[in-house]
Structures are given as C-alpha cells and as structure tokens.
Length: 324
Picture 1 (cartoon, rainbow, N blue to C red):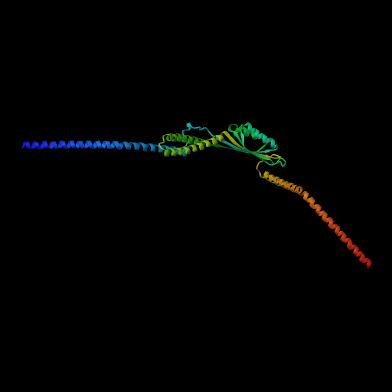
Picture 2 (cartoon, rainbow, N blue to C red):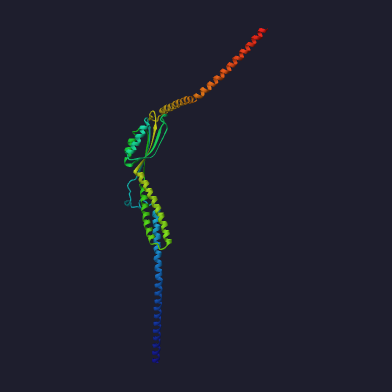
C-alpha cells in the first residue's frame, strides 16, 4: 500500500515538474517573442516619435515666431535694454509771415534753412511784382537740434502773423518696430537652418517661400524705422510769406475793433470797386472812342441830310407864295 502511495506521489511530482518546465519554456518563448516584437515595434515607434516630435517642435517654434512677428510685443513683455528706448520726439510747425520786401525776405528764409543744415522738400510762388500780391510757400526740414534756434530766427523775418507748433512722441512705435525686426531676424535664421537641412525639393520650396515672406516683412519694417529716424532727426516747418504794403495790426478782439474793421473792409471794398470801374473804362476806351467817332459821323451825315431837305421845302414854299 505504501509503495502504491509513493508511486502516485512520485508520478504527481514528475508531472508537476514537466508542466513547470513547459510553462517556463512557454513563458520564456513568449518573453523572447514579446522582446523581439517590442524591439522591432519599439525601433519603428521610436523613429516615428522622434520625427513627429521634431516637426511638432518645428511647427511650434514657427508658430511662436509668427506670433512674435505679427503681434506687437507690449512694453511689459519687451526688455527695453535690448532696444533704443530713448525719447523719440517729432517736431512740426507752421509760420505765416507778411513782407514789405518780398524778395529780400524770401532770400533770408532760404539762407536760414541752409545755414541750419536743412533743406526744402517743396517750394512754390505766385502773384506778380507789378500787382504787389506775391506769395511764397516752403516746406522745410531742419535738424532737430537746430529747431529752436531756427524758429527764433525765422520769426524776425518780415512780420509774424501766425505760428503753431506740435510735438509727437513716437517712442512706443519706435520700440515696437525694433522688437518686430528682432523677432523676424530670429525667425529668418531658424528658417535658413531648416533650409540647409531640407530633405526634399518640396520642403525646400516651402521653406524658401516662407523665407521670402519674412525678408519682405523685414524690409518693410526697416523702411518704417528709417522713416521714424528721419522724422526724429529732421523737424518739419511749413512757411508762408505774403507780400503786403503795410503790416497787419494785431488788435484785441473787441466790439469796437470789429466795427472799425468792418467799416475799413467796406471802404476798402468800395475803393476796389471804383478801381475796377476805372480799369474797365481804360480797357474799353479804344472801343468807346471808335464807337463815338462812328456815332459822330452818322449824326453829321443825318444832320446834313436834314438841313438839305429843310432848305428844299423852304424854297418850294417861297416859290408857291410868289406865284400866288
């Protein structure tokens, strides 16, 4: 009986040992198969993940550069130490002058602009010396550091009748343009790196298109920055000079002064009207003389014809009376 029990136990142990070995082999086989499968899939997946991450990172960086280039950074986001943040002021003014010595005063204004290191953007003149109604207009650009001295000197030419000045602070706009240029230049460098590592023609062409767009924006903002620099470096002054016989008298704006001015303007208008009538008569005088001569001749001819008829009638009447 004992032998039988021992045999059963031995058989069970052997079966268990064989099952464990088979299970171990199966597990090892599955483990090996899983390992190789994981190795193969892992290699492919690793490559795909790296490539996806690369393009995702590139897209993210490009998007961030797009945002930087198209959105104006606020002063709170911009490190002003990296840019020229000094105060940028644009000065402009308008001056109206009256002149009794028109040619002399025009030459004086041109000399002041030249001596200040400035130049004229435009000049124009109108009127005639004979009529004494000449006028001149100038658009002058004067260095900003000479602006105050120029304004003080030009006011002494002729008689100053009107002056206005304005100052425009463009500091924030100037810093904004610098920030945009820096962002665009950084983006351009990144695109040039991608261009050098392009793997096919399609990618190369797309990158070149984007490079052209960025370069165009850089040129545009560079031109804008030059405009700002020119406005800051040179002030704009518009000057009008009018030729007059007497200078206008500046008086307080009271009721009596307005009455006097109205009467003076009315009297001046009446004088101008009489002058116009006289001038018109002078223009028409030759025609008036010719018409007068023609009328005189007609009158004389008709008068002679009238006398002849009268004498004939008188003679006829006397003859009839004598016959009776």
